[in-house]
Length: 353
Image (cartoon, rainbow, N blue to C red; front, top):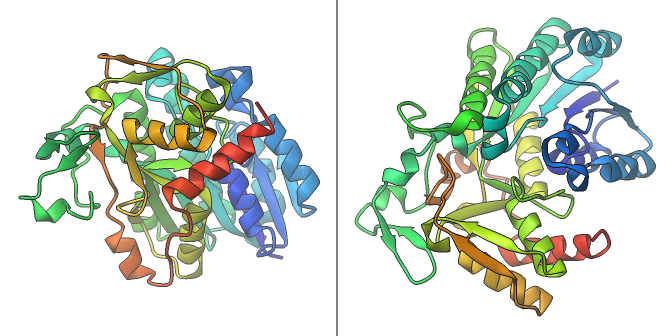
């Protein structure tokens, strides 16, 4: 039997993975205890998505387990053992601001939880492929010291620095910078996943995501950039832009495109490999540009204001360079551009807000 274990299975990336892998594995074991509701409140709950998955995919079994609970994870992994062929670890505390409120919770979820998943894999299914959703925040604020120029609606890399014309690659240092507490806990998890590949020989892949997005995101002010922005555009709820004149640039990758990257890695895995994974030059925008697209799609002016209080460790300009992944897996490419993604988010939210 071929089994996939997916943590954070009711979240954006986890739920996309359930759908993507449902016809590729005999059984999908979802691990998700809806901590997103604890982090961000009732409106951020993923329970609606859990119900959707259980009704839509007959080979999906949901387990409301906490990834910090070693004994419960041990029971799950020992039951299925070597039949587990893929461990996709997407569960996390994902917010800069929230992490500062409860550092112990943030670290135990992000770092200890990842260690637990790695140990379960090493102990019970060491031939399985382990895929981890890391973050570009492991680079801290180092990208902010790149040579940037200010344009009308965005910041952009200086044309004099051709090395970064395709974005930021995996050679950027993750040391000696301000990460936020969240970024630090994700660095710990990121390095652990690499080390279990390099030291123990497991098939592990680290994917340092830009802004991960899609129609199944339960976006909030503290996490879920495009989803929350579109929600405010639809409802008229007030939106606050934090710092950098609203010209800060993010690349945005649709959850399907990211899962498709995982699928390519699964079919030809490596040990302790690291990839930047975002929208790259194909799908990126500034805050101001994203607002304009949302207004065009909804046909309404947004209710927003500007605050000079930029978030600690936040990026002014971040675009992922995916050259390394494309060289390793030339069969992969993007399916969703920025406008198509926002239109999907708009159509998904209309039925829920």
